[in-house]
Length: 199
Length: 372
Image (cartoon, each protein chain N blue to C red):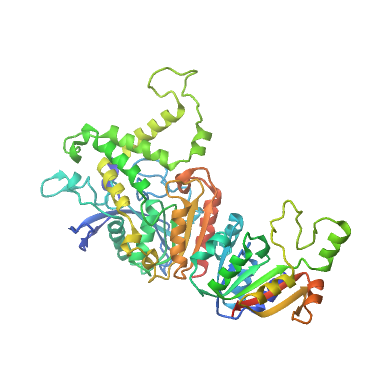
């Protein structure tokens, strides 16, 4: 399982209700279910992935996070997880609002467009960056709202969103992000992991 | 229907108050079973059939000599594996395969009931079938499953008996029959009643059969079970055993011939009055209204796990209506999974060889059973 999921799993408490938005083939769900006795549900847009999840005995509904989160009541989950999907939404702000309505807390991970390799790619090559986390070309990428760790950090601070925990991930290692090291982490990390809640 | 007296039946000797107000007692519920009920009695699956189905889910139907209606899904090593599970299916009341229905003989007059049979509902059907749990001394079913009208019965079953099934699988169905659904059913009923040989439902007593009317009803309904693309792909404008149009009203096109065939084989196995009663029961089905406009309330007492399945090309019970069930369940934090299966076979997809559907069904059932 990828390092990102291990970190997410550490952020989630035991015996809670969790919704994994864009749960893919259910790797994280399976881990949380088996290791933390978590009552976990998933929502996933790809039929193939939903079928894979069903095969693993996971409770998943086929749906689109931008349209289908509305069916869940307020605070019906202790945690809502959104892993590397925020940048693919038409309206990321609306999705964040929905995550924080449905969940008491939300865990959001964003691939960092401020990572030095990304910046260097654009600077040297002059073409849209392609990296391990961002493997698609400009014309076929699902990622239409790329942001940096700093962007997301500021986004939360500008709103009534409390950054409960902010972590930078680079080379399988995590480190906390704060106001003082924000610019450094924004350059050195591939992925930002944020535990947020409404103020 | 010569073997009909040999089919398995229970006689329910507990009064059942129907939604119409009438009380029935000592009525037969015909059923069939597949597989073996284990010692713990935790492997029973109650399958509900659709409008024109019957209790013969799998294997060869002893009456029609054709494959059981859900042979693709149910049987040894099938998605619902009868080597592992004990599958029970009953003929709905109102039906014509041995359960209490309009072709029953009224013992006081010695005549066939016909339209003297009471109007029944999905709720009545489910309550009648519940008696099979007592008969088999099953405290809790592992699973209730069914497509189309069978799916409606699944929803009604969980609503009526919130903790009598571990999992529930409503397939290609709705919680409330739509105006379009009612319209198509009305077309079928009018076609039967317009047949002079229907004689106000008294045809059996007069040794008649409104086969033309019933056949047209089946033809019209059959179109609603398929998709436009599916029809186009299978038939297109292909001609039936002729090189050119004949400028007449014989079946020039293959699709005409196909529908006529579907209509003609249907009348051999189905009773016209049953068709009227069962379509009426479907039209009256509105689980939302039963719960004062809030579908979630139908399931609020239940711990049953749900898995809702719809099909992309099903325009009779479209994905949106299936999703309404999912939404109602999510609103109360129920354990509900949902998938829309890609298929161009229309509403009938649930009855046909649609591998992704069958595989998903198998996986869901098997992983749910493991967690016992």
